[in-house]
Image (cartoon, rainbow, N blue to C red; front, side, top):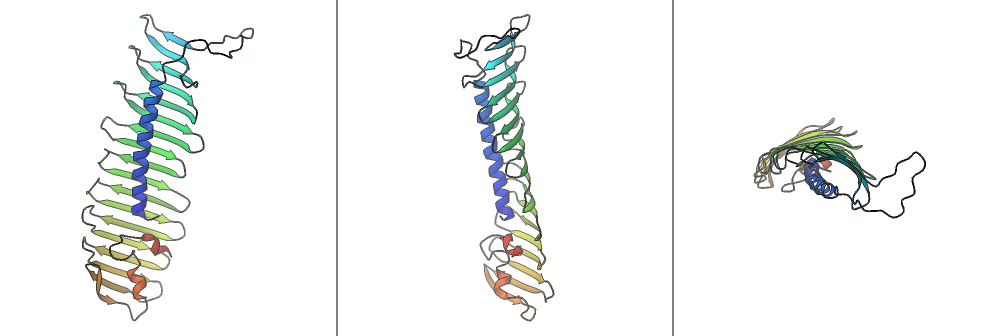
Length: 274
């Protein structure tokens, strides 16, 4: 995976997880209205044991402050309410795993904690501004995503068996920075302006130390130093090589041009690690 693709994956993860969280939160709040009628198959109470289908905690004013029972989907839930009877805390054992939902003073979801079977744990912290989310998950790999708004600045961190990566974005058209260290291969960094494909990339591997600068029309400069060989340099204009110095042929011209994926293809950092 390239770092730019990694950044896109983190963004998609944050947006999709935010959507799933929102739907799950609304579903849980809707399901808190409990079935209070008789449920078939309930055994008689053993001696000294009280069996009930639901419990309600009511204050001196007759306001329901807590409910323990079953949802319409037949899974157990606990609701803790404020002095108006509105839910503030929801705890449930849903079919795909246990969950906790905490709401704000105006009864909007603020914190979601899920332990999803066969996937992993997730925590979401939701700000007052729409799209302002901090999420922490550990599904296929540990991931932290921070976003100020759905189209605002974003910070993403991830770690896997193959690499550790960080992506910083100012939002659409605002520029990006990506950092990564690939296990046993090397480290890399890239920056772009987020508008016209202007890019700066640096990579260090066991074979190469490389720098590439490119503007929006695929004109740029690439400098590559290969271990135990002479350095190489190439200039391009509109995606076409116009000058190169290959260190006496020590570095193959095609290999150098393909180092960052070629003109017009974006930065393919995987080629640094071959």
